[in-house]
Length: 94
Image 1 (spheres, helix red, strand yellow):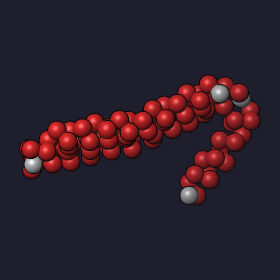
Image 2: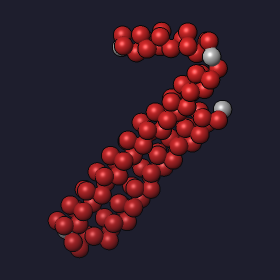
Image 3: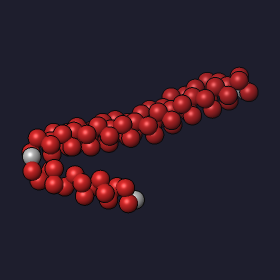
């Protein structure tokens, strides 16, 4: 936590002195926000697909129901990545 405080304290004079540096820091923050927002859905989709394949291998007769549920889970999880992208665009251009 102390490292973050030191980074913020070091960046304050830079942001106050030059507008171009402030824009660069805004772009960096927006990029990091989208990067962090994409990590969760990526892990979630990987987990959903892996568990679905495992379930279909264990019970092939339920493959249709598992596949349908898998696609719904992927869609809902991907919506989180899209929300992160919208936040990225808002931070970048607002």
